[in-house]
Image (cartoon, rainbow, N blue to C red; front, side, top):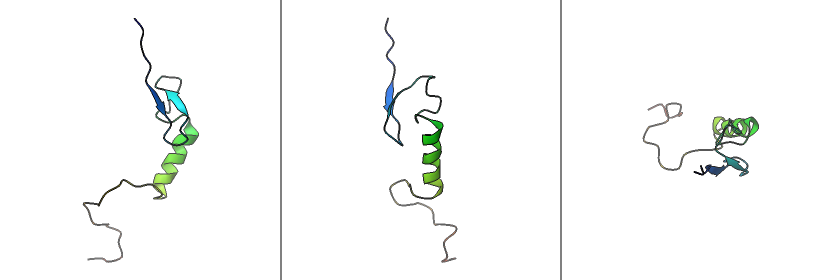
Length: 63
């Protein structure tokens, strides 16, 4: 019986990786790519598409 290994691309750099213990940072290929992705979210360079269902609690409108 042959076991197939799931393959995926790193969401940061698009390198193909296998979903195995060889890539403990999966779905990223490395800790560097994982950290770069986190930094992008923290700096608000990335966002989830669509309208927010909540008002921004930090908005300057204050209403």
